[in-house]
Length: 326
Image (cartoon, rainbow, N blue to C red; front, side, top):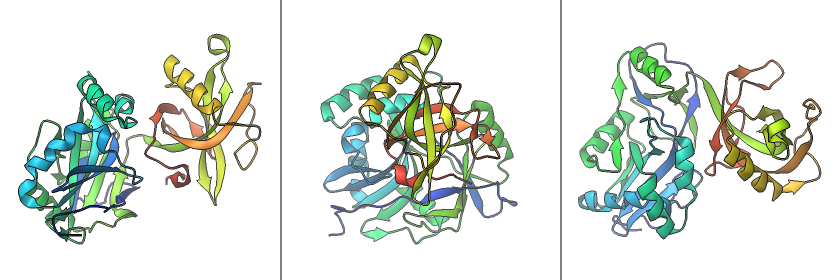
């Protein structure tokens, strides 16, 4: 591989651990955690190549980011890390809108949808510059290089990095219903493919991914369709049931889920233990191949979700990666 080429290169993104606010803000920086799709962007003489968090090619899905090749041409080979988000009419990030973009592999269809659902790439890290990996540099140095290299464009920008007391920022995030903050040690290196406590997710409410192992039929006006999705997390190689979610499912998403799960239907439960009956509703089992994101109030003492709300399908997550977060 030459200094100007990143052909065949893949990078597993570093992940933040779920944690609490640092006891002191000294040596930490804070960014808003955007509700989108993690994308590693490779830019070299061949153009722009986009990689999802689970190493799948996403280049065709977001043609707007092709303009990064021209802007970064003078810097040779560059690798960026960030989050692609879709912004709703209310100005808030909308994961449900983003789902209309993130599954599209046909280039012409992606161009059509780009006009209807525009996206923005929120860039927060620089992993490679002109033939040299920068992951071993402290975050503060990578950030300075990033600011020198990337200028804001019509479909990309740098995330805002806040230093000092984050209380006002967290209050704003909570008030606007955003996903949370990421606290990053300014001296931390980029640990490829690892979840490190030097990056911390700080959430005003709980949310994480869950594996879908089936569905329960609805009642009354929802008879014959999906009433709720049966959820689980992986532990010791087995899928453990932890509740169900129906709130947040629209009429169209219920129909879509019935089609998805019926195509993967199985006779027996994929969960390792019994699933408590829900007021006599019939359960239908499916292969645990789909991952969803859910917001919830808390974990109960017996390991179930309290007040869950469905947020969307995650095609960029693998079921085997989904465990209960601290």
